[in-house]
Length: 268
Image (tube, rainbow, N blue to C red; front, side, top):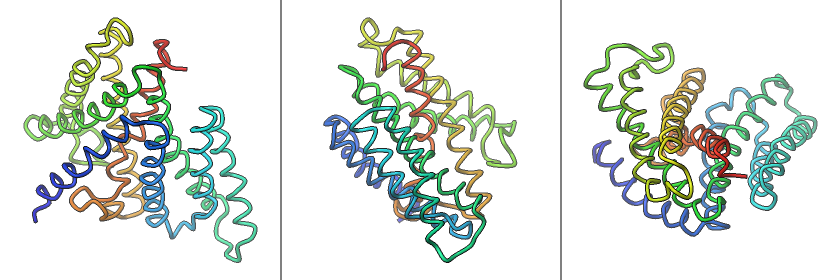
């Protein structure tokens, strides 16, 4: 099976499941987030194993971050992230291995903040009364639109490299195409709620923010993988690579979308 065919097959299988669990929300979506995030975090720690991440401390911090968010909101999510420092230090103190403390703490906490908090903001968006489901759909499909628009525009018109040292294939032309595609997608999904949720200008701003954050999220993971000399975070999703490869854009787009919505007074 070709890489393209495997990517399409994986998308066709997973997309209905994701949409269904986002629709159900609550603990159903929490379960999906916990499993997907745990796999992504594991992939990061495997890629960075030479840096000696404090894996147990990271796992505990990740779970506490999402549980805290689910039970107590943003404040307790922050508490879970901070608790990762404590867990990491305890694990480091009990370990016989004496790797660089700064490096071990850094990569451990990075994983929890990057994956745990990144996914947590999607849960916060889903909890927006009345409009949470469609807001999450706007984020998910705008990220997809940004990626697709950037790919085709960049492949057709791309001449100026966006970040050649990190991802040589990306271009400024592709970025512009991705922003337009994501903005259009957010507009289409949220148009029906324009008089109750976000106005049309606010929706366009949301789409643009999602697109820009999506590109930064993708570049961030590319920089990490390049530093760790790996091509993909894993092989779990066949042509899609690993779980972290699929979530990288969302891990930045979710927080960006939440704070844009918050800035417009539609989140708490």
